[in-house]
Every structure is written in structure tokens, then in C-alpha cells.
Image 1 (cartoon, one colour):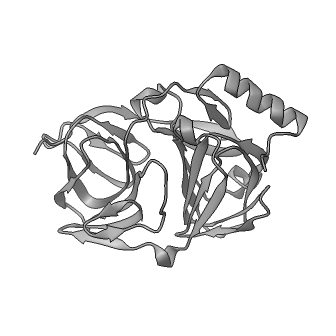
Image 2: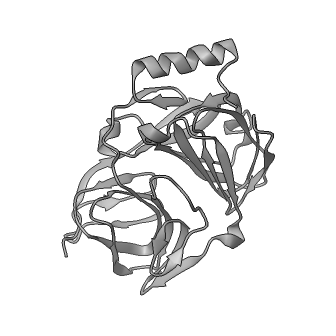
Image 3: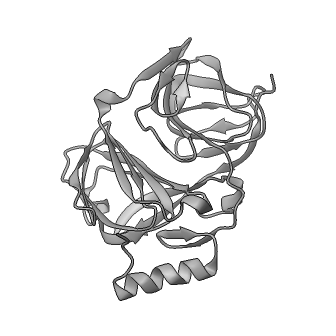
Length: 281
């Protein structure tokens, strides 16, 4: 069984998005082909409400899926489908923008550190204009898989006989939250055809059998080819997102919140938004 090595490491950059939200863009500033089908990964985390309270007022999306995973805190959301609610600590919202949706995400005041992730996943060409929908996933509905030295929250995908609650996702990705014990060493089987990404957000550790590159909080490792992922946690333990999905290998035309396959499709989407014909029946 071939163990994957690290191809490259993304360090991320601090950016200001929405109405003034400070966050770390770990993925989304480089070549999207390298992480296909994953487009963007933002990590938001601050104990200062000034960094996040301005939120993300109404804005459109088309051609992608967005996954919001709240570690701590709460975000109120509303959308053009009439949905509204709160994404609270431990919860996930999986949104298929498809043909088009307009929504807002507004953080709520929180005594502590607001922490979470938002991941953008590309949709295949034939599903770009699919009907938009939401899946709200409670913390209690997320099952755990476990092995020697680790526990894994299975949010989307299947592992060790455990299936995540995010079902009927077009590209059948993996979205796992893995917590490794202090000093633990273990190997996870991965699908050989997948792009595999690892983002550490607590502790630090290694993801190559030779332990040549230490991955620290806020860093994302893009893994090479193979059927296994070697994981070695530091003495303080480690927690990381494991993302995996089969590359789409399709052209990408991307500007702001809309991702299509051609510049013509992209131009059409923005023209429709300006004209008020963006949302489809």
C-alpha cells in the first residue's frame, strides 16, 4: 500500500471579506487545479467581535457548494429560498448553490472565541444549474469513527463502517474532523483516485512517513498520490480536517462568489444578477 507524501503546503493569508470580517484564507489564492474539486477554505477565529460582527450581508452564489462548520459560536443565516436559522457550535450547514441562491451569514455576539471554517466545493458542469438546497446538520447527528490513537467526526462520506449525515452530495467528498491523541501514530486508508487535503487547526504533526515536514495550525497540506495517509501527532495532540474528493478536471471560470466553466457563463450570471433574473424557478 502506497503512503501519500506531501506535495505542497499552503500557509494561508489574512484577508477581509464581507462587510469587514477578518479571516485566514488557507485555500483559494493559488491554482485551483492543484486542489480540484476544492476551491476555497476560510478559517475564521477571533475573540474580538470587531473582527467578525459585520458579517456577510446578502450576496449571490452559483455553481458551487459551500460548507460552513462552526467549532464555537453562532451564525444566523437567511436565504432567497425562505430558509433562516442559526448555525451553532458543532453544527454544519451544507449549501448547494446550484443555479443560484442569494443569502446572508451574520455572526451573533459570543462570549469567547468565534471559530469555524467555510469550504467551497466545485460542482461538475452538468450539475452547475441544479436546484439550490440546504442541509442543516446538528452536532448530535454527526457520528464518530475511531481507531488506535484517534477519533473522527464523519460529516460527509463513509469511513470504517460509519456514514456521515451529509448525504446525496454530487461529488461524494469526504469531510472529516480528526482528533489525534498526544504522540499518536496511525494510518488512514484513503481513496487512491481522490485529491486529499489536510488542514491542522489544533496542535501539530506530520503526514509523511519520513516526518520531514511539520504541519502547524493554519497550514494545509496537499497530499500526493497513494492509498494511505500516515499521521503522527505531536506531544500536545493534533486536530485536523481531512478533505478528499475526486478531481473534476474541468475548466474553471471564477469571479467572486460565482464559479462556472466559461467566461460567457460567468458574464451571464453577473448580468442576470444585475437584471434581477438570477434566481431560477
